[in-house]
Length: 250
Image 1 (cartoon, one colour):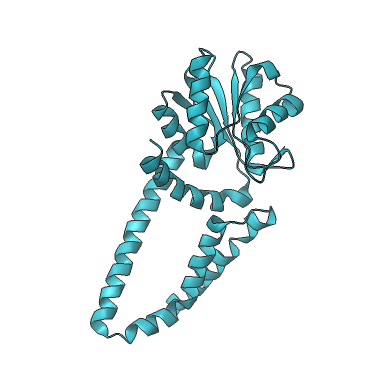
Image 2 (cartoon, helix red, strand yellow):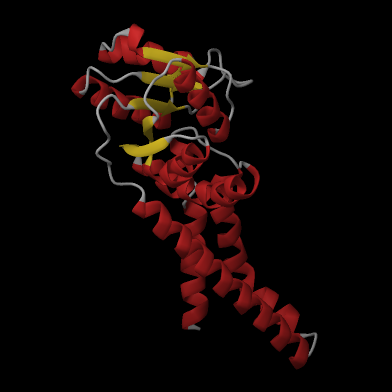
């Protein structure tokens, strides 16, 4: 009985987890995944009754498989979270390091909450280190009216008074791997420092630093402040993004 009540409470909380990102206009499969899990927990007693009809042996076999999958998933998720957290703290980068602002969605020519945080993190560093250059990275998606790189540059110039001459643009990339591949090409072409400060969210830092290293760069952390309403959703998305990058983005 207590287990059923706890499962129902957990299920309802997971379903309600869609509300914070939805309140800021974010709704996609990664937002909905916890809700699907919550629905599963709510109907779990019915599923158990159905499984019981197959007989004791089959029921025990299914339960063992389910528990094994649960343990493997828990170990996998815990390992990823530890690695993510270890890479969040700000790094002390060498002088004249290049700040690379990784793109995120643009709406009506203005940065979304995620991108605005990354731009602010970059601006804080660039203001404190006037000898550092910057690369604004991100192409124009089908639902965007300007490229993410242009939005980053324009916001740095207009809102933070960063000299446009300090900002290079990569406006042809559409994922983190391409962001860093194109940024590396800009760095090598202009003889800039290969020490890069990655202006991105903490949840994204491990993957970004790993990909930057593969592109011949030495990465340092310049973490952005992530809106609390998006944290849960963004971590879920990154749990899928890390294995995808490790397997496919080399």
